[in-house]
Length: 152
Image 1: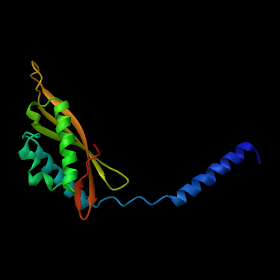
Image 2 (image 1 turned 90 degrees about the horizontal axis):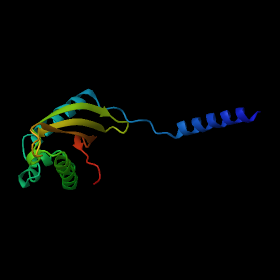
Image 3 (image 1 turned 180 degrees about the horizontal axis):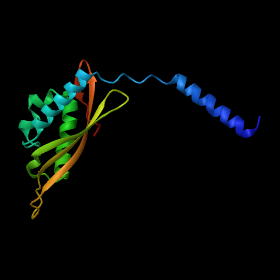
Image 4 (image 1 turned 120 degrees about the horizontal axis):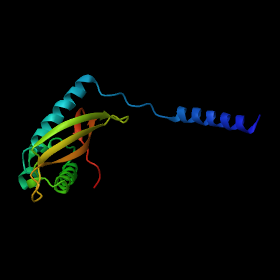
């Protein structure tokens, strides 16, 4: 057997071995679960729009906290989102509107939701709006959808 054929045979054997070890991908969420996710995403992003996000009343809002698996997860999300709004120069850290651009289903059963927030700019002499493109990860666990923030 030539060296080239041996390499091809070894690669084929390696691919077959790796394929045998791979775990099957989780089943995608069912249609009612996806419809529920779309509804929950709309509810959540409406609640964070048209309000000052970096305020104590927003931080203690139980209606926002119910979307997170734990108080720590909410605190991580809150800090990250408030920082994103400040870095994007939103006046009073307040997004005025949002558009959900995409739901991207991942192989582990989670979903990345891409949202564009729009609001007034806090920069002097800039009378136009500012925008923030954000991607939030949602997971289906314990019979419901949860927002899962990344680590800070």
